[in-house]
Length: 153
Image (cartoon, rainbow, N blue to C red):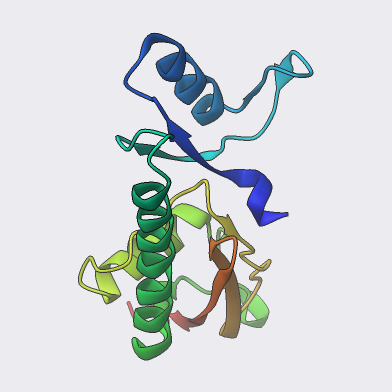
């Protein structure tokens, strides 16, 4: 299913390509004429007729995902501090945006997750350890280790 969310668009600098890019990024579905979920769109300057360059670009995109997965694996746990109420229940939720920001911070900017990537943030109700799977590429995934700790006053 991750393949349905990631597109490599050729000719994106042209008029029709620009419309397609905007429609995909906004989550439009031109086949069904209704809104869908936002898609991850990679734009290429390579001409479709040049198969060798096209394959190189696809390999480069996959390698970036593999490198990001290695960084995630080696960076250890992402720690989020939260205020705690009765029964060690946390206030608020852990969101995709918070995970993206903390991963970018922890990896010194080497890993940039986006809202368009498939990330299954679990429902976090209390302190503890969690695993957050993220799909970086249709063929590459990683698991982020999340530690939720009490915020000291």
